Image (cartoon, rainbow, N blue to C red; front, side, top):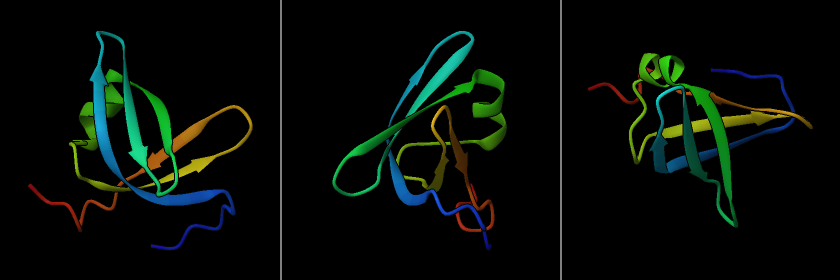
Length: 74
């Protein structure tokens, strides 16, 4: 998978805080953690779980998570 966005970091999901409308996903990217807020439906669609390897992409106002579904199959 190639991504052109220069603001991307690879990491592993270290914690998930589920809510009724939104879910916070905390990703360990090495020296610190990045927190992404997703709609609960997006969280369910991605089938994220603790320990999954993901990419975080970000700009000044948002963080996007990318999961390679071929690497983390259930």
